[in-house]
Image 1 (cartoon, rainbow, N blue to C red):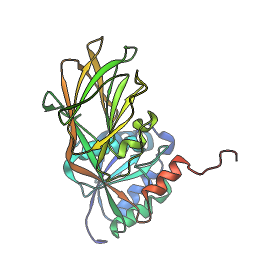
Image 2: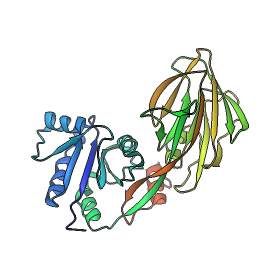
Image 3: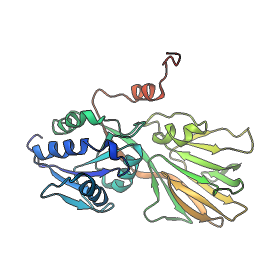
Image 4: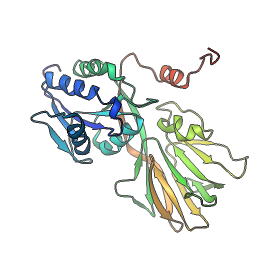
Length: 295
């Protein structure tokens, strides 16, 4: 594979001015391999305007209008989520260079950029499959906002009273949640918003989803884990007659008269991991389990 002509599509975070320096190292490494590098248009303009990063023969793209052998996400987990939404069902492997904080998904440190590129060309990596969920409103997907790698959350609007979310699983009534919201999480998203609301941690490939209430009115409501083959139907009622649907953090205002259905998408997102990496090691380190806080 060392002599293969590969194309890399790069997404980046334009809000990390003090952490962007390894991008030059990354593009230099790709140029050494004679790779074709294409960069998301807004990120390239940011680099050009702020760092005078100019490479002849560079190409740019907008949104999901690209093809590539690999995608490189340069930022934190949020940037990787956005990259994944642009990759969609293209089945292009994503590698995350972590210049953010937590780095559950974007796990490669900036200091190991060269190593990560070498590993791709030498095929010394492993692919980790992550399930995706999709949302339909009145039986139709929302253009550009339907699928989530982490979670889909139904939430009250700012300053509004709590909402009622009547929830059905495969047509059977589960409960009517009176709460600030309800999170439907994949295993990937179980260490994100769901966890902060008391949801369980779910390992990748566990084939499950979790429903976690946000500030429920009743303390009897607990997170519920269901098979990811289930179809979830939601009907919302609120005093203001509208609410928010957040799909991997991208919020959309909706009216109460809609019916929402959530189910597993028919494709996975493939994330590149280093061969010696382990989900449980990452979990233990990021959560700082076993660390003596007295020191």
